[in-house]
Image (cartoon, rainbow, N blue to C red; front, side, top):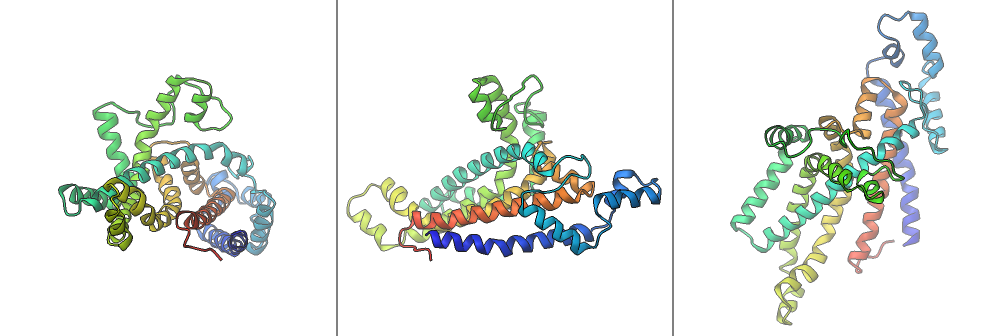
Length: 334
């Protein structure tokens, strides 16, 4: 197991180098000069040239790339062109908001998706099966930003049940070690702030988690149907196991392998969807921050944030591969 993990981590190096090169190339091929964006279109050519020299944009691209990679390996992700602050400091300031949103969305997607998939597989061709799979198909088809706007319209504007945007009401101020409002509010026993943070989280989490939920539901249904045909399921029934035991203990455990793969791949989907979700709900996370960086041509933020997210994606997929062996001991990693 240890040798497999080390091998995968070593394979991650060329993967991350490829990601960094691709992002670096795309960022520098995009139209727009960061120096001109920062100074304004009426700035003199001399001022723009001086700022380009100050930011290191006058150097050849290969030198800029080598400098970016060598600094990133040492944990230095550069200085934001817009704010002048270290990129890693701004990232860590906003990252807890995105983590809280992504975890809550993942929780909603996995719980709702597994429930719908299991019931649909057990009650095939029933009204519930058709309703659940139709809902899953609609969930995959709906753009995140459109779903977010519809949720805001119905639950915030029309019904006034949930907040329109933001992460916390203005009357609350949560200071804590984690930056996760749900956790920090419980640590200081401010239950009103916890409830307010929870209400702010519901709509963006549903909008972000709907597509992964639909994928999990469809994958769970298909996997459960295949597993329910196996001989060991008939043996479990013949031994007198209850229907719940057969489904939850014997069938679900073996049906989880392809679902685990989907859940691991959903990490990238969640971070991609978080960009649109955070913009729609004015959620102060890295997605909204990254959109602002793109508009400002803030190269260090775009390059560094993409590289950090790619690293997280590689690590999560490694964890999923290891979990394969935990869920199904017949699998041996080598």
